[in-house]
Image (cartoon, rainbow, N blue to C red):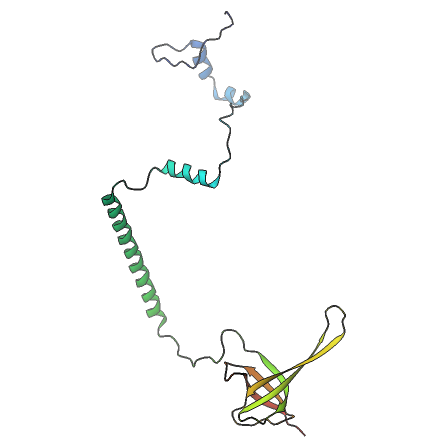
Length: 196
C-alpha cells in the first residue's frame, strides 16, 4: 500500500500548507503566462432538458413566488391592481395630451368605399331600361399564361346612373361603390363616348 497518494480533498484549517504549494502560488506573473494552462476538468455533463423542465428549474432558481396564505395573495393582488391603475392613468394622461396637442380631428365626408383605392372599369352600356341603373359590359383581353394566346372574355355589371345620362352603346367609366341595391355595386363616373 505504498502507492497511496495523499488525499488533497481534505481541507483541515489547522494543518499548515506545505511550502512547495506556496512557492508555486507565488510565481511571477510572467511565468504564469508562459506556462501552458492545464485543461479544466469537465464539469458534470450537460443534460438536455425539455422546455417544461427548464421552466421548472428557472422557477426554482427564482424561489417560490406564490404567497403561502390567502391573505398574502390578496395583498399581492391589491398591489398589482394598484400598479396597473397607476400605469393606465399615466397612459391615459399621455394619450389625452397627445390628442390635445394634435387638435380636433378633421371632419371629412364619409367615404363611399372602404380602405384602399376603389376599382375603376371602362365598358359599353348594353342596357339603360331600368330607372337610374345601367348595365355595362366590361370586355377583357389578356394573354394566357401558359399558351400565350389572347383570351377574350366579358362580364356585365349594374351601375348607378343618378341622372339617367348614359344610353345603350355609350362608352362609360364606372367606379366601385358601396352596395346600392341587390346587384348594384358600381356608380357611373362619366360618359366617355356617345353612341352614334
